Length: 145
Image (tube, rainbow, N blue to C red):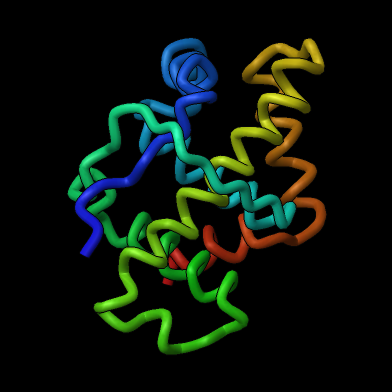
């Protein structure tokens, strides 16, 4: 059973900026959850080998975070209900990590390299996703249940 969530090393600086230079993400975990949802919404899943210090799985302990990891795992596994088996928790976490990496790649490309103000660029991304009635809004709606 996974006890940590890996962070892609190539996005260390971006994660630092997201946490320290915006009022949007108070923690690295929050930035990673957003990135994973964005990656899933845009179907951008990127595997990676080089990692920074992982985040303890207990940090993802609230219901919303766990539900997000599970929903992303189910969505990426062609709705295979067996993905929810306890023995496949490592697979769900790996899928989540890969979508987070994809989301960070999108943020880096569209916001940072695009020259936009970080907060304005993130807000634009959220509005674009919301307009498309994407997985981001579906996950957010689930948290209200």
